[in-house]
Length: 118
Length: 107
Image (cartoon, rainbow over the protein chains, first blue to last red):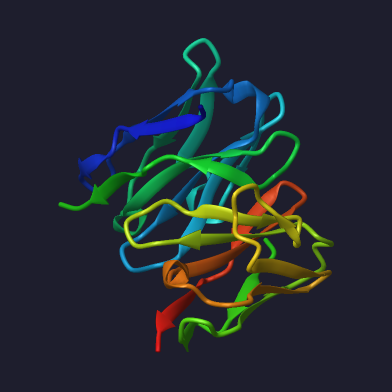
């Protein structure tokens, strides 16, 4: 059974850093496109970052240079390093897996809340 | 990035109604479009991929159509479990974008 479990969220001051983790089971993270989406309270969904192929990455413009997506195949875990955090980064962050051979995300984690506030 | 515009933003409907949600892309994306359903406090659920391919386990009352820049999600007979927010999502050349969402409310 495919499962994704996110951890690492919390309350952080502006300018601070966090690392989100997404532990995967039932498949290998290196075999599928993997991504992070976020949702601020009462707002819509927003793709933040996707990792694909050997090491290809996508970032939304507002996080370029501040966030880094990566994966550890030995731990079967996806990461999102969040640096230089801003109040507008406050959101629930979801980890997601794309179906094999596609760019559409068929499995999602439960989400982890990141709150950026002083 | 390609922009996705959904309409309407909110839709009030009754059980049994036929419901249609539209999604327009700022440029052609062929059939690289998905539809998701999200309920409050829950992760999104993939309903349809490649514009019209129904995911396993999704009721047949859901259908998708379109290509290029205009796409629709249709629910043929709205059920109580269908009251939720629906998002379209495009994929093009290693970039991904959601529409702003359509909330389907009870009339």
